[in-house]
Length: 306
Ligand code: NDP
Image (tube, rainbow, N blue to C red; front, side):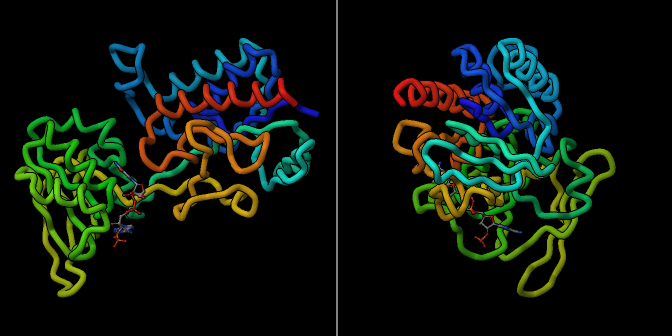
């Protein structure tokens, strides 16, 4: 039986693996279909400490993988199909290929995907003006015009973060009322750099090799309009990859794994969670890495006291 299995290979999973391997827990990391997680889909990462010139997302994840392997982490490119975490002494992990892995403890670090509009033009212009991370990319839009899509707390936070750089920020929301908390909504509504277009959805992102505007349609009148802009920030919420855990782990209403206060402990003893799958608010690589460290230390403590 494995002492510790880590599910997921983003910054949370690899950081947990580095700490667990250095604590001699010989972790097995199941890397899934997208080894390296979301960062491998970005280009330059400029906000990860230790890289003053920035670092390519793929390279950063490859370095984390090498560091985890250096201390004895075993990595398998396996997809987890289902889990049975109910037996306190033996958690079972069923792999897509048919094998079953048994473990004393598990760290879930399966991440989350941003929800996109699903337009072909949006896909085409990702990393060329289309972004789902204002914290990461706002600085690229100094004195430019940007639009933010969505009406929740993320959209308000992104819009406000963008005002530090952009000349003008336009929030486009599909209803005439924000979903965001009152305080966040008021802050954004009172910010003179932010204006709002209500009852509208984006039907096309315009531009050949970079964003030049968005075509929007009023959901009530059907009227179409072009809004010129240099960037589009999509803030439609995130979809945590927690489907296979939902019958066993306690999740919040958006599907994020609930943690015991100030720890990585889930509602099941010996099962810990780290990174974006358990983080509805910050969703940053460095924060996920910190959560991975915490989960490894919690798992080590749990195994020692068993
Ligand atoms: P939410 O689910 O709260 O909001 C998503 C927004 O996107 C909604 O306004 C929704 O519209 C809109 N939307 C969804 N799909 C589409 C679509 N296909 N086309 C157009 N619009 C769409 O997600 P958030 O990420 O904003 O927030 C998630 C959770 O995290 C919340 O609990 C939030 O409070 C929390 N959070 C807290 C923060 C803080 O406290 N600082 C910061 C960020 C998040 P509609 O309203 O019509 O459904």
